[in-house]
Image 1: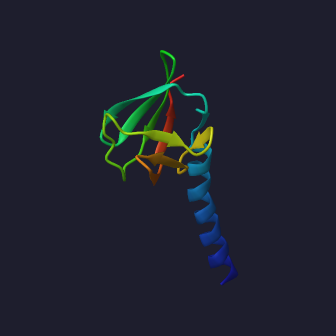
Image 2 (image 1 turned 135 degrees about the horizontal axis):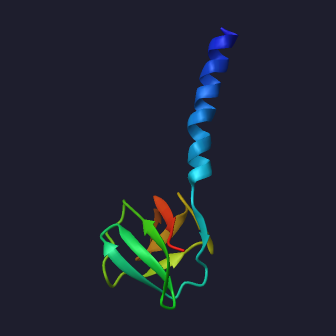
Image 3 (image 1 turned 30 degrees about the vertical axis):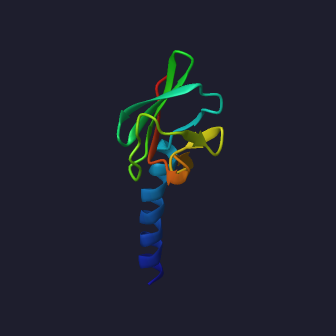
Length: 96
């Protein structure tokens, strides 16, 4: 019985650790603009330099949407405010 629990625990840790190691986190606190790539993806800019791609699958982002970050250091599964509603960021991908 102990062996089965130990094996299951090892498998769970093995499945979770790669996701934590691969999670991308970036300092986007002083972004100056954003561009809508599609209804669920935006590109964050600082001046003319593209910093990151954010995927927000639960939200229909419009070209005139207002976007606000809740934290300056943004990671996968953090929250973002779009048009006054809070959504989870599916992924943060660095472009630098």
